[in-house]
Length: 127
Image (cartoon, rainbow, N blue to C red; front, side):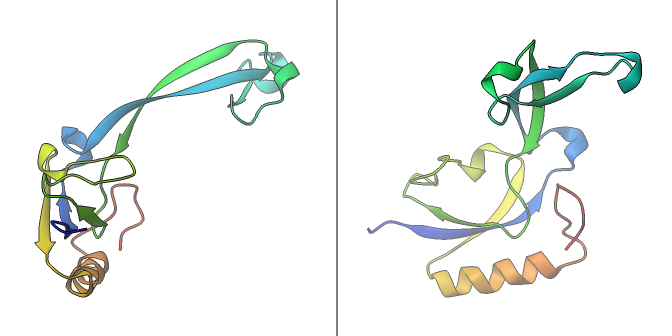
């Protein structure tokens, strides 16, 4: 395939700004009704993991999740979009990235920014 470049995410927006957060949803099933024994909270499991007979109520939860992480390596097509997978396009988000012509250079840079203490993961934990 020609026209492919390699990109490395070097900086992401502060999660408080929402510039690197996408909206999603998750479907949960109530597998235990609220009761005094469970603090009136009930118990929920992912709808994908629960046994079919366990469903008593469905809950749709709105979520926000990071689109990119610092140090993430991407393959981009001539439009600047991932040609497979989710088809993400970093230029549409509040992130900084660098493009490279070789995978070796991109991997080297990804390792550099991943180890940088100034570039923590948006999922926490740091580099």
